[in-house]
Amino acid sequence: MDVRQLRDHLAASAPDENRSAPAKLDAAFDPSNFGTVVRNLRMERGWTLRELAKRSNISQSALSRLETGQSALSFDRAHALAQALGVDAMTFVRQMGWPQGAKETSSRFHGWRSLTPAGMGQHVDQANAKYEYVCNDFLYRRLVAGFVEVTARSLAEHGPMVSHPGEEFTYVIEGPVTFSTPGFADVTLNTGDCFQFDSATPHAWFSGGDKPARVLFMTTDPRAE
Image (tube, rainbow, N blue to C red; front, side):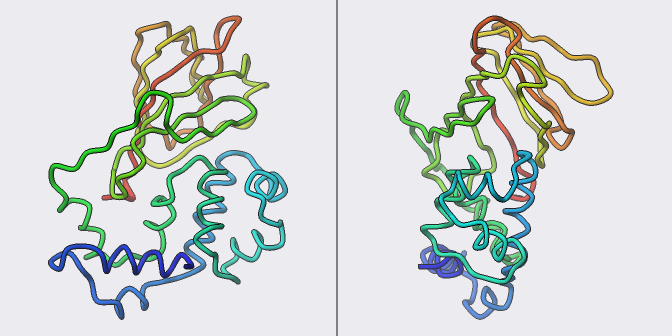
């Protein structure tokens, strides 16, 4: 199953009143949009194609063709990319050209719920932090949440700042942790402190103590609206 088939499958399995015609979905599909999303996520993390290839076990040449819209992608490889980039697979599917009517599907689900037992989230390790994404089983969520063990001890250790659409809320479970962004003095948060910011602004987190900090985060994505 490739990613277009996955998208169509999700649309076909929706309730009748939420279902869009397959022809409309096919007409809206644009492989270059999907490749652009992958490229943007990669660049937000400051990764080269070589690094993403290593993390996802997909060749550089295949990734290059994907990012430029020259090739399609299997569901297995889409899943591998989602794991490597630390996002849920629906982040990709949302960018595959769903028509405006289909974007309303998420708002029509009522009373949904998602459970992640302690320690059973999706774990993604990066050079500067260890992430655990939780409550990933519901596909249409507007809020991504999880825990971060911040292992970087300085901005230099963190590497390039990152940015992404939406807003981010953080609660420090175990601090201190330092927040850095261009144009402002660094802010140090201690255990129990909360912080919310526009995540489109380049930013970085690093531990403010002699051991890793631990943070709960919640991130919105306006593209889900």
